[in-house]
Length: 106
Image 1 (cartoon, rainbow, N blue to C red):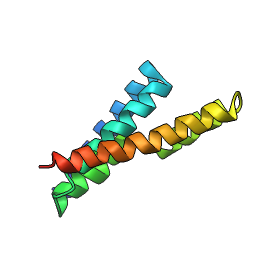
Image 2: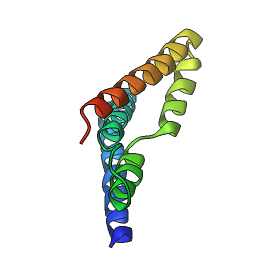
Image 3: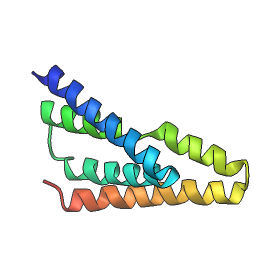
């Protein structure tokens, strides 16, 4: 049962990422990664299959490190400063979002 739920949640997470990136581009990557950090914070007290399915499959498939790398690379081709600001802002906001999720956790 866990494997089937894992596949379903991973598929849904990937579909959400694909749609958000197609619609909002760079902003979609940022929003999804911040939402994922917050979501992982929210469910950080869960363990076992629930965390595996929700965290690893659903949120893991929705968020994207490679998307951040792509955005930083793209911005860096125009301005190293913009790339650094985007990366730093993403990291700081992500830690803040995760912290909020832990504070408001389930």
